[in-house]
Image 1 (cartoon, one colour):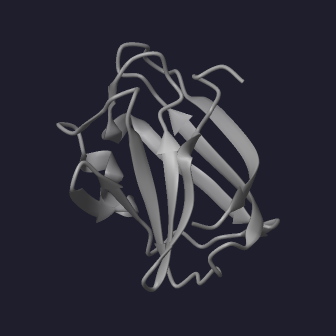
Image 2 (tube, helix red, strand yellow):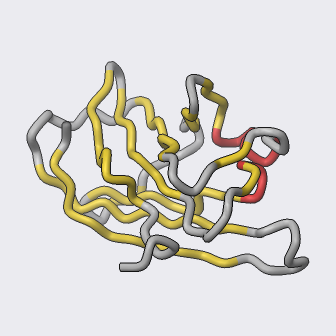
Length: 126
């Protein structure tokens, strides 16, 4: 899998207090503002996950997923992972799950382009 096709980060899936964290990678060849990236869908073991209360954590900051389009001055660097934080999902540490994530990228320098990537991977909960 090419780096621009991989969207699940090597840090994988982590159980946290009250929810889970999924590492995400930017599926593009250069850094972009977070406002140009959209989390399209997340499914765990084939079940769609409600992302209405989800957030993105990056570089010591966290903001609601619904406000991601406002993050015009926060850049996602291609070598860094961002984390999708989903409250209310309890997964047992060590359990194995099929995780499917879809991201959309709309680079500001290519008007009208909206590229999507979907990746499914079996992950063990950290």
